[in-house]
Length: 200
Image 1 (cartoon, rainbow, N blue to C red):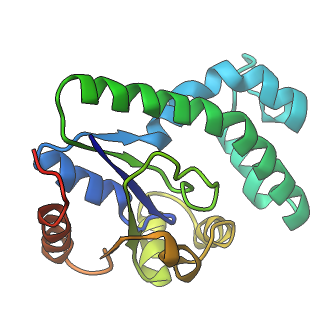
Image 2 (image 1 turned 180 degrees about the vertical axis):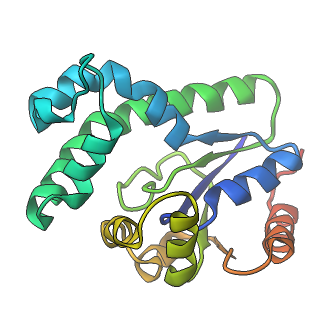
């Protein structure tokens, strides 16, 4: 089974590309959703390393407080906190995505993907056959984040914590520009899908 790594920064449109792939019968694991599902089991480990302040009254992870710890704290502290968060969560998330990929392979799928923001910068590309990098101009990404209820400052802090697209491009076999109309993005995805060496 051919494995696609679908990478890209905040609000670049990875989920849009994943949705188009699913429409064409290609299953895609959502690493962000898996991470959210796995977060409660990691609460005690994260609190031990990041402090009890990331917990809610019930002892679970307060995602708003966690986000403040890894993005809004002073830059050096936030970067250190992100390193801890990633060290705890990435192995769990990648194990879960591997289980999904293996299940799809057993079901006979010829192509499957993983949608995850940090696959490139975290060095998690082993086992993937192609990397698809989804891009969009920063003002577009900020506007999308704000439309989802965030602030420009929050968006910019998250974007600053990720590699710029130019640094990620050398790893990508396919670059999808999702800065314009959905139809244009769809055309790029369908063209890249048609050019894959394996088809369903």
